Length: 213
Length: 213
DNA sequence: CCTGTTGGATACGTTCGTGTATCGGATACA
DNA sequence: TGTATCCGATACACGAACGTATCCAACAGG
Image (tube, chains in turn blue, yellow, orange, brown):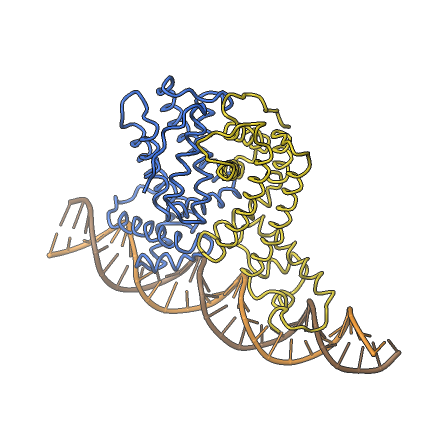
């Protein structure tokens, strides 16, 4: 059988193994990087044989893609949650803190995500998926920013809430790059805070900063 | 012989082959990504045998490292040149345009650079080198910004010219990420311009934007 | 409990890349 | 031009990972 397309009997043990393979793959990818990882390594880490792998996935690329979708959706939910907590007025510093917690804390995820970026940069189809994810994220941010207008006036240069959301994502990406190299989460969080306040406020506001452990 | 450490006869043909191998490697890495590339592929692309490779490099990692240093230094020189052209007063938009030309135009370089980032993220020694490069770049930017103070007041949030330079690099990294996915250079240049003006000016200045082809 | 289907393990042949050891042509220098 | 040295090509043996074909055990349904 190919993967799991036919109707067939329901399944049960299959779900476990698939999940185990994905979890193991995440760990191995984070440690060694996709591209330096063999199918066998993933299987060994998960405690399965290669037969199990080929029964669940057609290739390592397919697994990687599935893995990314799984984790990215998970993160997206968490971000949405972090943005939706408080009332109609947006407490920018608090929101930034909560989102940062989700986005910058798990180094393994950053590594895998960057691997996936590199992968997508060479495959338009994959890139499309990633761009879609990013667009959804931007939309959520823009939506949140729109409700907070009046509290903080956005700089005109960026052009509306959509532009501001775009800028937020860019700042996040920039900080991520640095974090991957220096491994200093505190530094990264502080900088993300600074950049966001610089980008989202009009420059007249010098508050909104906290020292983060 | 190991690599090229012994005194030995000077050399000549060796220099050519080494350069050819590096050039071929750049093309192959950009196309397929480091990690998906074999030594044989590089040799074939360069028109040499594997013997030539092992005579010049000890491993693919070593070649990759040498390649990065070569190209990064080259780019760094170009950036320095682009920043040093005009007089003591800094024409921000023009400088941004010139630097952008160097930094965002060559997609192949962006790909290889990101591959190297991923590589460095998992190897502290390599990361140190990359951080050093980035520090030099930041220093050059900070130096340039310092001479332009008074023309444009920097936002207080970033804290001095060093902070501003840091922000500039972050913006560049952020834009790069997006560019790798959507391949829209014009878009990237426009956004880099917007972000930089938003970061470097006090928010009161809405000029300084151009539409870039 | 029995049975047919499914999921994963094992075993196999093959391909691909590696690293080394050796050889012949090219090159610098007198 | 001669010659000692260097450089890259060729040949070889080895190992790693792949994909498949086959087999046994686990499991759902009756």
